[in-house]
Length: 506
Image 1: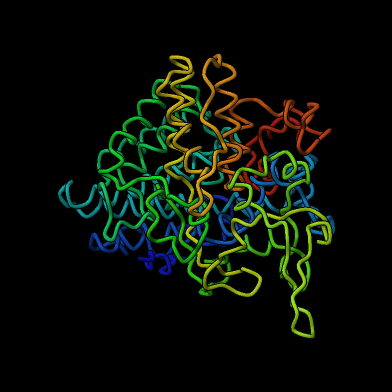
Image 2: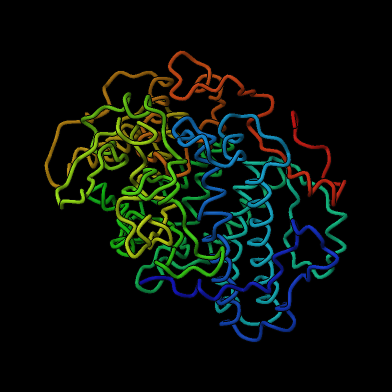
């Protein structure tokens, strides 16, 4: 069942807590905790509103996820006539006035502000813990999710864990050390792991559960290099997979069919877009046209297009390549016949991303306003986190290899036809070789799912993947002293000098 609550977008909540151009004129919010929140249902409505902020054009609809994709070595700019701000992100020559960053920085704080309002409202109700803490836990999960992105993209950021009642006070905020932001994220996720339910009604995966919180705890620990803790959380999810209803889907393609999204056992957490029901930026999903082939038949913009080398170096025997790419196009001729065009005849002359364009469900002809539930976390990633973290603590054990082999076994299923590729992990690998194998497995399994840049960053792979001899998308301007972080938007520094200094190199 679709999470229909997200259509109740609380646009009057404190969305301008940080990031509005004129805080003196923009109200903090009309739905303040002391006036709006009367019942637990009001809190639930506010929590649902946070998902509406995330499923919007500035964040998961286009700007933020596009920036993550362009920053990786898996997605290039196709049509170079696109907006300069995208080319700057892709080419590692952005400045602190980049338009994409200016869009998604305040949007994340709108999400956080709405979550803080829900928490403050819940705490004012005086209800028993058992009645209200699950909703508080959900709001704290959303807050942790938001800061987990912010701290990885920007480093130290202002940490706000309260409802802002005085907009002028925002002008005095300074940035919080990364370590303290991470500590707060872990605290929120631990609370969520304790109080969230095992499942939601109809097993919807667009609201977090205990399993969701544990999976994100594993990811946060992995990011920080706390491998024992990452393994422990991932292993707990694996051991309790039946309790949470998790399993690998048999057919990899089904993971990216909007019409099947609501029944996918593999989804740990997803964001729900509702087909053709946009409300301005809200619910505006542009991944279809951004990745689609740029011509009349393809109906796309041809912007987010992997380099040819990404496609050519991916073994053609891997079913995941077939699912991930569109390398031919069927064109309807005026006389009613159909011509199949190879990718060399595409305007950008290389295969395009198919995951978000091939089966968008109830959407426009170009794939806009899709019906996708974008999977932000899949059970396959839990398995790969367990494999990587265990290898870092105990070496490439049989158990660690077994987690990777589960993912590879599913990849051998070509829509019901059994194949022999990819093979199981070979025996005798050393620790470094095994970890590299897991990272490569993540690159392929999670291709175009907004994960690769974070892997490059946490493993300090930039100079290898962008400047090394095997670079899939060479980026000569990449500078490890600058480019692992993006700049704080200049407008924010001008409004609040306490946010200085700017990130190094901008």
